[in-house]
Image (cartoon, rainbow, N blue to C red):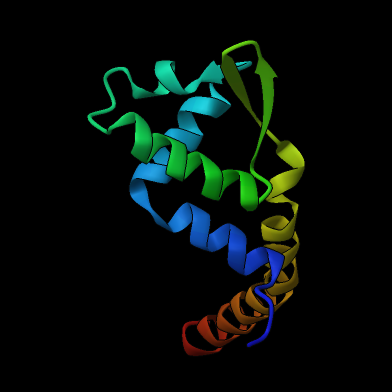
Length: 109
């Protein structure tokens, strides 16, 4: 089996709505603990920990142990593979939109 590409790992991590919600909460803070993420989430602490593991493996979060707590923060560089992938395909879409614009002008001068 081939190893998963960074963009595939990233997309897989963000495909889950609960995981995406956890990531969005982390992004809105400097740092946050599992206990803080669990409060009001409707998800067990164990599930939060599993989602954090996926986010960490995808490079989206970093952790900082401090005593009995582990603090999580967003890793901005983790989104780089997704930005690079989108940038690659933006050329395709820009060309398609230009072709569509030309066609529209031909149909309705």
